Image (cartoon, rainbow, N blue to C red):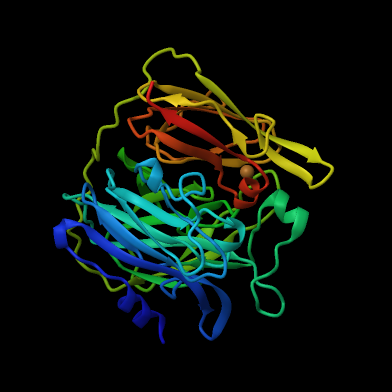
Length: 434
Ligand SMILES: [Cu+2]
């Protein structure tokens, strides 16, 4: 059965009671990473990435999830500010066993670019292909001349053409980076855009450990959104860094020259380990010129600052590295693997210093709440935004502020390099009503 047929068959969309419903099934898949080249992986509804889930801001979303994997799993809705019980981690639900079905029900409160992925045995389940984009559309969605959704990933394929086995302590330390670069599950695909037009590109980095420093052949683009939706105004740029788990929205174009081929490249970035040159993820073919009706507003939204003026830090979260006799080493938080952090009270503004005591970068991810970045190593960020992933540089500090609204329950934060999370760099904490 072709992947297309399976995805059409199994994804149900219905407007009944104005809820949006999907059926998702995780299972084994022959993943065609390039024409005629397949690997045995895991997919949602028989495809990698899983189907693009489209929700509407403020309308209920229901996802009936069935596990056809040979192992338990849970599905996390990365970036969505939903009730704790629907966060899809093993702290808030019993893992979905092989053959079982669990229905996730929630109402996405924010428009933006999100994604979904397992929160169990992530280093294997995501590497094998279990991830997909989740787009929450606003009623007055900004439409440019077109839209593309690009999910970046890299895959390590061994000499025999299979997904490589986990590389032991080296991978545990560096995270698993791949030798095959994928956009939307395909090795180095080609995209088309008409000369003269401007498109809205939604980008997700679903890699286990790779930092994508995205460049479109050096052509300028505009950053219009990040993890939590629009930023306040478009920001011109020629490159943008996406650590694992991160998202960005861009206004891409206009390109002048019909017939040009433009690279979608990952520029060198040193994250304290590994070394890579410019690596190609895909290309853009500039097609015949078309008229543009795109109007990019100079102001996209207002983001009220959570902190104005001097503030005191309410918590310090320390990301660390520690030798271990049994495991070689661990990645820890406040000196503890799989840390249990102090509770947070609903309604009490949080100002956290996330301190990285190690020699390598760590992308800090907070579940269920957006934060604003106040400072990185004492420097204010270039623009205000809502984030759920922020890179914390080696020996550096990210100061973030977030507001626990009334969604009590167990939440977590962790490094989004999947191997670091597995090696202990994560914490649970409770948000509770005072
Ligand atoms: Cu890390």
